[in-house]
Image 1: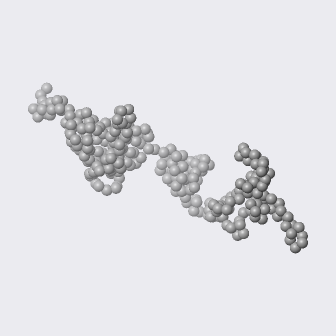
Image 2: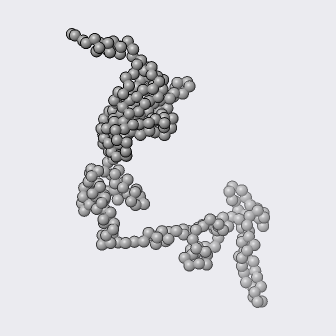
Length: 292
């Protein structure tokens, strides 16, 4: 087997000098079909002597794919490690830097814009490569039709329930919802039905909300309650005057595990029945904390 001198010299140098990294090497994330990430090492600090190393990274291939570039940091005892993000590419877009320690990295791409660029590449100079290893992890995020419908309802309504999800995935009048594109068509038909009074009658959310805005209040409070004034239209009244707590306070019975034997109870509000002379006639009035 004959080998040219130049090729043999390069091979000999690579074997004897493994600490010298090849600048400009191209890396891409491994394809993956689930949410569990697939990781590979692109730069091993044990084999690199250069403080900085330039690499070229390939953008993700399609929508729903995420590729992350990161390194690790270890605790002083070496028992714990932490992920430090350095960059990412998602949905076929260019690589971009991540917030944090490596936010100063600059990615130079074939087309520096925000458009989807699957398969194109970006170059970056990684730092501390003689002390840090760098990794790529790929993820594939894919929703089931039911999850896709749930996300749609979270955005377009006040939340989804089981009946809504069942209807979206089975209703024949909206079409099948078994793939993402089919679900988009079904959701479009659902929105059209919502805007058609002959299909979905027009109702007032404000009316529904105001009917339930002023709930029953068990205790009497002076502050913190919404709703109209007691004498205003729309005010809500109870059909009882006193609560069980009032009875405890007025009888000296047990309250919070303590017996209240003293009467009047100076440290509680008193509820008393008093007689009043009104124009020569005796009238009775309940007073609470000295007020009628």
